[in-house]
Amino acid sequence: MAIVVLIIDMQIDFFAHELLSRQKADLVAHTNTLVTAARESRASVVWIKQEFSPDLSDATLEVRSRKISVVIAGTPGASILPELDVRPSDHVLVKKRYSAFFGTRLDTILAHLNCTQLIVGGINTHACVRTTVVDAYQRDYAIILASDCIASHDKAHHDISWRYMDGKFGRGMTNEQITAWLAQAPPNN
Image (tube, rainbow, N blue to C red; front, side):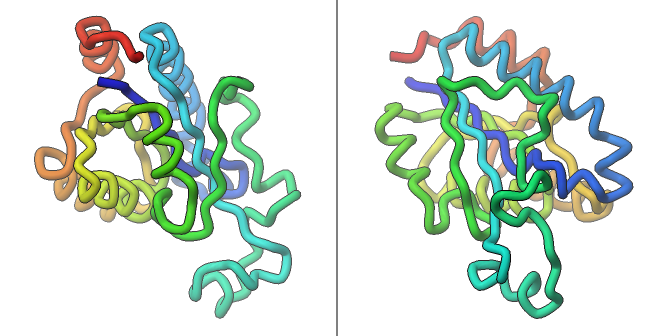
């Protein structure tokens, strides 16, 4: 059993939203704790980030129609938060849609890593996290939802999405529970 941690969309532009901005310090600390525990258990870490071209030609319909200039490739706002512990040995994958699986090399990366178990964290619960979790579930990955590391700019939709995912598509666990679970899991190959 190989374990992979997926961290979704922890990028500068997304934390401009007031609710996420208020949660930023805790999310960063919890995410760094999670990836440290993962590395200590020899799990791989994959950082997922959204990026669009400056002309938005590859952006989602909403972003194009509303001309929302967010996570533009090559701009500081598209960068993963600098406070996060991203390492050269980690994988960084760019996506264009909500799901980290859609139109990306994620399937190939996970197959190469012999992944059977995913630990998922990131933002936004109701959008990119949820669609990635659903797509992972449909690919028969066992999923742990890192409850300390998942948040949204929309509290109501976060709560609804959490209730929808936890117990159905994955199992919600705190960092403390994940660390204990990792200590009992067989080492990654």
